[in-house]
Length: 387
Image (cartoon, rainbow, N blue to C red; front, top):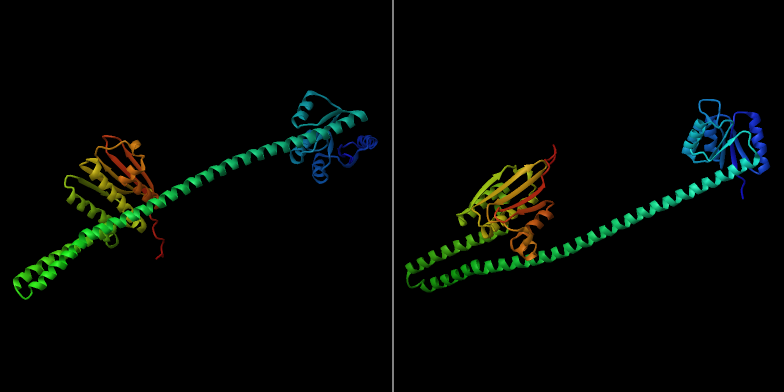
């Protein structure tokens, strides 16, 4: 077993010689001697002894107890105080600075040896307790980290499931939209073209017989062609209104409100469009239009309302959309069923808002109408010199 390395801090030369002689007899090694507090702190950092024998009374600005406080806080080296005094004030100060022993001069070799071994043992136990506490802290950190990662994995699994469900819904929606378009084209434009074909065939037959009959047939054909053109425009407008690209979102909303009121004459639409067109990102315009369109359809079909209020306004750095009606409202708790949500278009509105980086909320109670609210970050103004 290696000899304990001792640093002596004592400003009396004769006392230092006596302590060295005692340590030599006990088989301990003196690694250094300091005569002031400043020197003791320096040597403690350089030599890192196992134990420091510290005289309480030292010459200079710091006494032994203050010096020990600096050494313990910096290097955590055990200190045994040596003093000719044992007054209560000195003992209390020594206790505050975590002394590992207190010997009154003169002391016997056996007392000094016991204090040195006890100080080393207490320091080793303190180190082991600290290591154990660090292990406990590490285990607690690892436990929390594992719980956090498990929660993150669970959330990731939930997100993956939601994405799979969403992908399935998108595919179903695409197929339903394709079927709807196919039915519309077959029933409207297809029927018009078939009628045109029959009229042209009839005109060819009558061409040699009666000019007036042929002219009348041509007039009918022209009317049917005009109807087919209007029907194709209607289908195209339902897919994506060209007004959005030609004039912008705000004129398109006004046009939608006017067209809607032509069909639903008992439903008043109040518009408050208090935002600049330039504040709305291009990608958001069709999203906002579809939410308004679907909200109006819901109001007309389900709400029994006579007034719908549409507001598109800036608030801070966000764009806020509100579509509110004064209809019968509903119990939102009963709308949790996915089919019911999809039937009212609420699910598609919610997904449109979320996938475009927005927030979506529905508020309604029976007898108090329904409010559909969404918001998105406003478009940042272009920097000077940007294109």
